[in-house]
Length: 490
Figure 1: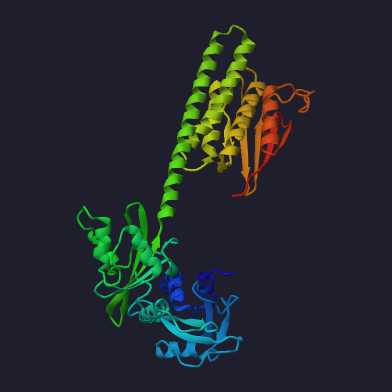
Figure 2: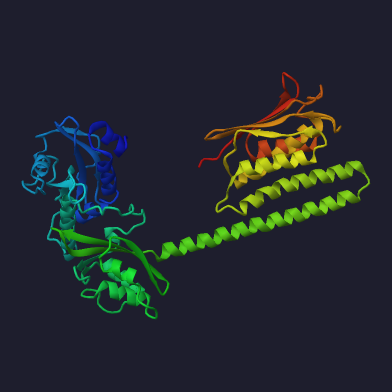
């Protein structure tokens, strides 16, 4: 399915300012669809001037839809949908005609010209289609919705909605069904939906909301012992098209104000209300949980460093060279795990930028090498889950240590190259550790090798990471170890 920008670019001659206005409109026209109980389709003139192309569509959440199939990317010739032509040519909202029964259900069709800015050009027409199959005597709530939809439609035709210069509406903004207040131009409530009234009851309101000055009432509930917040009053009275959160007694309510400006004057406002108390509580719990997890990683890192220090002290007291070397290898293994936990202690999620860990493991290998070997990394690991990062860090430590220790003699005069070559795909990680050292002994067999380091590597790669491990001789000398590790989705 092509994007809105693709459709506009392919079929129309609209400029970038027109496209930006359309994006702002369709990001917020769910409000108009819900208040109208109607489907919306945005038609813009075809670049040939012979017809119209549908570039966006919205279904209501408050009533039955008319269009079960998408009509986006449909092109119609002028004359096929006369109401679109009339709205464009006469630059007015068109409501003429009887209900259309061609689809088997009665559908009322209306068209609304879309103007960019108060004095800008017309850039399209909204077709508003209402399914009348469940028509009945409307309630007070439905009448308020329809009147508000009529006012918003007039604002669209006059180029006053969406609001120029405002930031895009957040995904979590209140919707019509969450709670709606209708205000007069003085900021007093003329209608309160049951959900909106319930939200204010939870904020601590005991009086009737209808007839109250919403700005002063809201400010009094939230700042009873403090100076009145003028910015809150400005938004809550419907004078500024913005969103705020108000809190009292543990209840958090999200309020969005939509000034209604028709015929050049402000006639009132809509206020969408949503109780977000539970949502904010869960967000706070997640923040607390994340902080706790990071603290645990920090403490694990400290404990591992303490273990490494104790092993290092014990190694210095041993006179047996083999025992000392075994303890030093254990220090390096513990150190590689500690590096992962150190990075995780700094991350907000259980994901790590592994390139930093790999570079630190490489540097640690170079520091303990007696030969003149400087390992290097080619390519990037990217972001890895903690469950994958820890075993890969240990594997990398073992492979680099083996390459330095067995590929090159311990003579300080020897030198060589070790490369960690990484290829990251969406669902696969390929790692090659290659050196130009002495190579594998003639009788080497991965299945029967007694090397503890390689046994650790094999267990981690095959059993824990469900990957494949390969070790072989390079054609031009040296050893090459290849890892193929599947990456979890996401």
